[in-house]
Length: 338
Image (cartoon, rainbow, N blue to C red; front, top):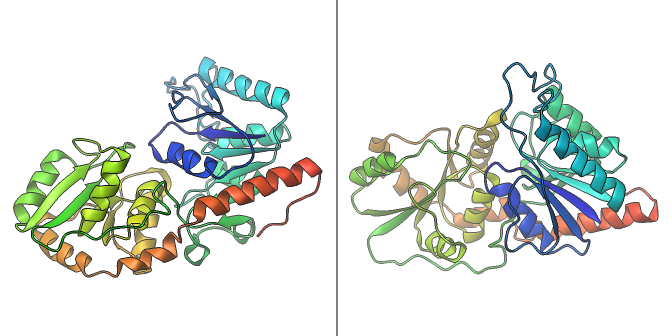
C-alpha cells in the first residue's frame, strides 16, 4: 500500500498522480484538499482546508516550515487524518507531491517517503529538511539536466526519470503546411501573467499567424488539447512541469515563458531548456514588437530535441521504482539508490 499526497495548487500535481498510477501495481490511497476526481478508482481521503491563517499565526514556525499556522483547526485535522490512516493501513511507502509538512509527518511516523521534486532553489531550511529525510527524490526531468543547485547528497538519491505526461505513447501528427501558421498559447491554472489583452496585442503584431489559447480565456478538453498541440507550428507555454511535458510529448517547437512561482521553479526550467537548446526560454512574456522574429526563430527549432527532456517512458520508470521500493520495504530490506 502506498499513500500519496496531492497539493491543491495548479493541475500538475493531480495529473502526475494520474499518469504514474496508471502503471502502478501497488494500491494507492490519495490525500488532498481537492475533490475526488471522477477518474480515480482507489481510496480518496479529502482533507480539510488549511487556509486562511491569521497573519500572526507564525505559519512558517520561524522559517523551519512552509505552512503550519498555530491553532489552525484545518492543519490539526489534516495531520490527524493522515496519521490515523497510517496507523490503520500501515503503508509501505508515502509519496508527497508536494508538502514539507506531510513529508515530515509521514517520516516521523516511520513511513519511508518519496518526494516528487521540483526545480528551482530548494535549499531553504524547510525544503532541506524534507529532501534530507526523504528516502528518494522523484525528478521529472533527465539526469543530464539535473538541478545544479542541489547538494550531492540529494542527487545521490534522485530518480531522474525524465518528464512524463498523459500524452506519452501517442504519435504526434504534423501541422498543416498551408497558411496560416498557427501558435498555441498554454497557460496553467496556478496563475499566469498572460491575459486576453496580452493575446490581442500579440495577434495584432503577428499578421500571418493564427493564435489559439488554452488556459487564458478558455480551457480545452484533453483530446482537444492534444490536437491543438499537434496542429501548432509553435507553442508558447508556461514552464510548469506538466505543461512542458505535454509539449514535449507532441514534439512541437516551443517558447517557454516562466510564470512567477515560489523558489523560481519555472525560471529554472525555462533557463535549463534554453541552455540545452531544447526550447526558447524566457523569464517574461516577450514584447509584442519582438514576437514576429521570435516566432520565426522558434519555428526553425529541431523539435526532436525534446526527446532528451521527455524520453516517453518517465511514468513507467517512476511506477517501477515505486513498486520496487514498496515491495522492498515490505520484505524488510533496503533499496539501493539508482
